[in-house]
Image (cartoon, rainbow, N blue to C red; front, side):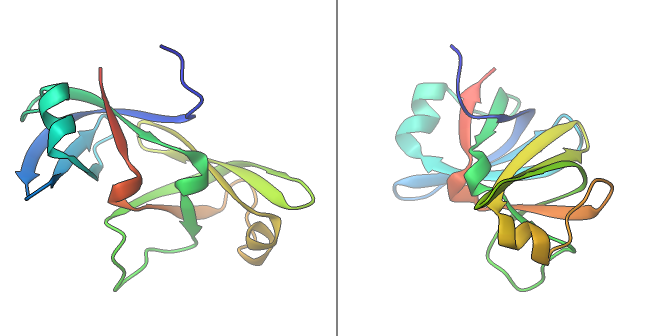
Length: 139
């Protein structure tokens, strides 16, 4: 299967915490970072997810926000530090490529935000991803 989602990070499930209808799934990415996904219990069962399951974490580029430093006191669970490798800016939007341990992320943000954050190749950033915006696929 080919997907249009550019951000596909391989990893391994470390914990599954079920709730009433949803569960949180903690993943250790191949680069060593931890990532949390919030998915339905039905998806957990359909994918057969248990501790040790190999997965790919999928995140649309429009769901990757950027900060110039780690953010304290925020509900966003996933904060991946990285370095900007490229910025392509158009009239309204910018595409930012970020090297993170074990892979590359792409973020689609407004051109104004890219300018305000002074994003250029080599700049340190933190990719912020809500756990509800992380989808999982079995590897």
